[in-house]
Image (cartoon, rainbow over all chains, first blue to last red; front, side):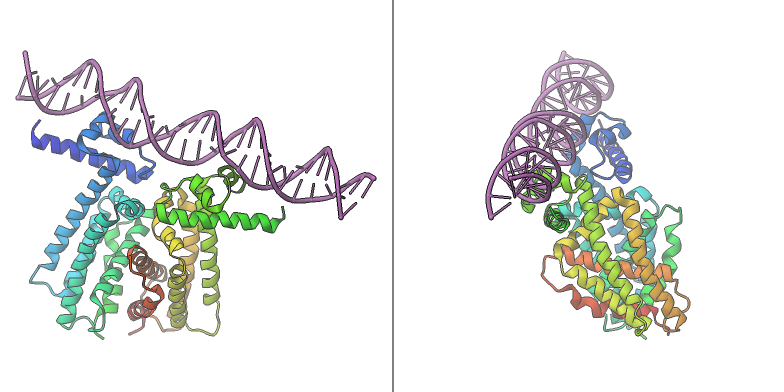
Length: 197
Length: 197
DNA sequence: ACTCAATTAATGAATACTGACTCAGATTAT
DNA sequence: ATAATCTGAGTCAGTATTCATTAATTGAGT
C-alpha cells in the first residue's frame, strides 16, 4: 500500500471520528462506531492509531495546525496594521470554526473535558496561538494605535475568550446562523476597548 | 432520621463528589471513590441520588442557584447605576468561582463536556444568568451611559465569555493567584468597549 | 427510664453490562 | 508464493447499580 493510500485511510478514520464524537461525545462514542462509519473493521483502527485517545489527540493536532499556520500568515503580513490584523484574525477564527460544525463541537465541548487528560499537549498549542494574538496587540501598542496601558498577554486571553464564547454559543444554539456574520460586532467591541482614546 | 440530618449527609456526598470529580474528571471518578470520601458505603449513594449523573446535576443546580440569587440582588439594587452593577457582577462571578478551586474546575472543564448530556437543563439556567447581565446592559443603554448601538443579548454573551475564559485560564494555570485581583483589568476592557464615547 | 418489635437506614459483595483492545485466520496486493 | 493488510469474534478489566443482610432508630407499652 502506498504511503498516500495509507494516509487517506487514516484521514477517513479521523473524519469519521469527528462526526461521531461531535454527536455522541467522546465517552459516548465507541471505537466500533467510528470503525463502522469509516467503513473498516474495529481492529483496523488499531493499525492506524495506538488507542482511542490517540484519535482525539490527532484530531486536535490536525485542526490546531491549520489555525496556527493561517494565524501566522496574518501576523507576518508586513502590509497590514495591528488593527487590520486583529480584525482578520477574528475573522479567521470564526470562519474556520464556522465552516465545520462537527469540528467546532469537538473544540468547544469535547476538548474542554479531555484537557484534563491532554493538558500539557493541548495547552502548549493554545499557548502558541495566544502568543500570536499577543504579538498583534504588542505591535498595536508599539505603533500607538492601541492604548499603552493594556497588557498584551492578558488582552490576548480576553480576545480569545470572546471568540471562544461566541463559538460555544453558536455550537449550542440550534439555529443555523452563519458565525462569520458576527465578525463585525465582535471587532467593534474588542477594538473599541483597545483603541487609544 | 430527621430531615436536616438526611440533608446534611446529602450535602456531604455532594462535597465529596466535587473534590473527586475536580481531580479525576467525571468519567475518571467512580461512585465507589465518592462514597469512600463521603464516608458511606457504595450503595448508600443510591439512597440519596438516582444515579451517578444525578450527582453531577445536583452539583450544578446548587452552585448555579447561588450565582443567580446573588446576581439578582445586584441587578435589583435601586441605588447603583448600570456601570456600578456590571462592575459588581464581574466581581461576583470571579470571586465566587475563585473561592473554590474544585468547584471552578468542574464548572470550567467538566460541565463543558457533560453539556452534551445535560444540554437543556444547564443551558436554561445559564440563559437566566445571561438574561440578568443583559438587563444591566439594557439599563445602561436606557440611562445613556452605554452606547445605544450595542445589542444587550449579544453583549451579555461577550461579557460572560470574557469572565468564562478568565476562569478557565485561572483553573488551568498551576500558579496560585487570586482571581479577584483581575477584576479591575476585566472591568476596564469591557466597560471601555461599552461606554458611550 | 427501659424494653423490644417494627421500621428505617446503611452496607458491601455479587451482578450485569459495557466497550477497548487483541490475535488467529482470511483476504488482498506484489 | 510471499508479504502486507485487514477482519471481527472473543477476551478481559473495569464499574454502575442492585439487593439480601445487618445495624440503627423509633416509639408504644410497661
